[in-house]
Length: 552
Image 1: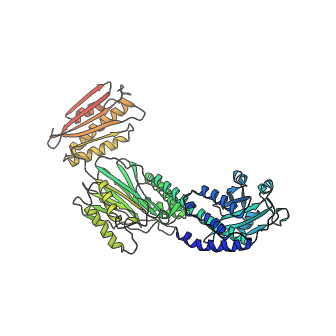
Image 2: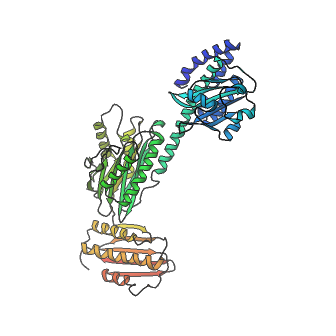
Image 3: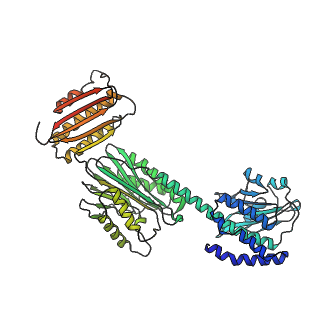
């Protein structure tokens, strides 16, 4: 039993006694009726089922012919019929009326009970035509109020003339108080579900699978349902071997925070594509937040070059990121500081950079991971660094281990978001696919340059091999497929002192178009030691080989 229900039980007994004395009814029966509308099982119904059941029960308790609940619309000025018994047409027709107008409008405007003993002679103008159609003669309405907030109106009616007295009013108001709490809690549950759905729909469904890098991300809702907030992360493909990493947190809870989170995330994506400079992106997001009068938010935005591992980042009030080096040591990055995004925030932010070397990881997170009531933030930051140093180096395992350790001491009061990128290196073999857009060639060149450089190839070898492979891919795009969306497989391996590159397509090669076309194969032969082209019904495989680390 909840505290509200426990506190309500004695009041229900007192209400029952007064009502029974005034009506000459059995006190035990009235007490049973009041318990009937406050029983804990009602809390497990969804809002529409709950309202329907409450109306059914209140008409039984007060012996009325009709009952209805009108709820306040989001505009704060209009009542809308949400549930009815005996007046179902009111709901089906979508009856609405402004506060202050008509019977229910009068109840809402005054926030006091209103009685109409005879509809035919009432000074209150009744605007709901369903009352007349159903032959309602007498009405009693009470406000639904929670913590001084108007929620709506509950009213009952009879087809015969009836003089509702103060005991009737008191009993209906008792029921209305229970209904108001139920409606408020139901709305909060609905908002929580919507906020969670919105939040999860805006998080990445999957993270990139890029050769030589590991990505991991997690979102954990707060332990308390009402605490769902605006935590988010994202990875954005900027093209030309560039990606962006973003993580942020919107102040507040519930649907508002989740909605603003979605707006900021969308704005980050738009600005990132226009201008990948981290300081400029964060400055524009600051202007966006100010112009939309949004709640305060924090943000880290980073632009990463996949070929070099260089990361430039800007920070707006967000917790310090960490870098875990190849030996597993965790260090905080305290540069590029700046205040949170807000209406009063600046439009300029600093920028810092780092190079993510082989076997190093960048760890981004929201404050829900470290903030705990009664604990110093510096102590929690030390715990996080220690947890990272004990964690496995693989990104996904690191993510799981750190979250498990930081949350094992009890419930966490705020949402948690974590995003990790780790430079895992390319090894002796890489395999990937590209599309048939010409801009995919930049990705091929970038990956091969990184792979060859990691393997100790000279600048001349790097230039020659990337040029030959780029020409082979360009030929496949133009001659095998042409316009459209298909896939080309690229595989690079080290064969003792040589690099071997294979490019496979599944199309049919066509003759070169134009007088200046057809130079790809001669260029490959000029820069590579061996060029083999195998064409079959299944497609074409181009195999390139060049010695590295010691002349041709």
